[in-house]
Length: 303
Image (cartoon, rainbow, N blue to C red; front, side, top):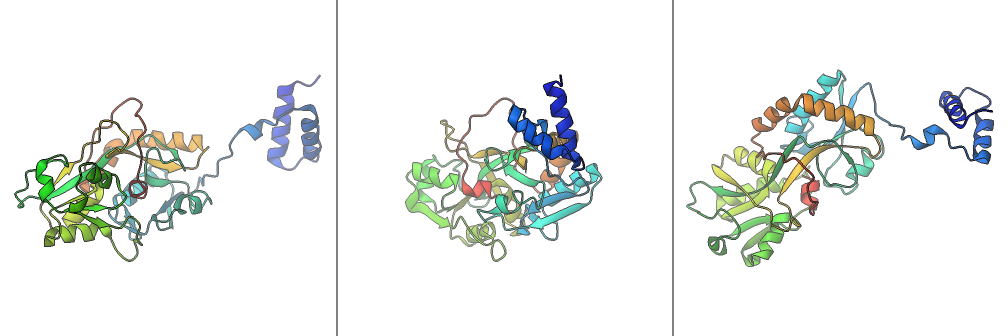
């Protein structure tokens, strides 16, 4: 009598090789007998083991660009070197709602670097940094407020992206009439909302702006604005988080590839952190333990 396990292993071997003439016949028998081939329960990973294939926006500084000047470009180089593989890019506008589907989903790449934990369309590695929204205050402004709940905010012009997490806090504290809004979706090949927000702040069109930390750090440097980046605290109910764990996204089901990347992150965390610090990314301590899931805005999921 042929055991069930032996039958499964034999069928898997034949189907995998694609050369045995009995493979199709055995498959038909397996269906009749109710024997499930072992490989049908195993996700076949589509990872390219000759190259590190990365999907990224070609014009989204400080994260990435086609000249590979962003901090995510530098992290990609580090990972490629550690894997001993050439680095290959698939460029695609991150603002598109089809970004994950048309890149990772179509197997044009194997990783998306810099994905907020909780984004449902990918499988996440362990986080390699934590950052969040900040309030950008020019140092020569004389502004004393350190949070949106400060009474001084009622007298200030506040720049914020409509639909972002901070915009909800602006509404919560009845500051909508003080808000100068910026669009959530834009073509990164034509303009930079982060740059525009800092330029408006310099020109006095706003008194403070609420921005995602990495963007705020980059654009204040680029525009030579001496400013304080004050972390915005998350509300106690955790429904509207202001800070996020950042991961590498891979295809759902590719657990082995995820484990490989987790090992790389662990072994090279100090070098990754050094890259982030070089770009002035506001870093927060990664807390151990399971986090209660909060809402993630489109702006954060798209950087």
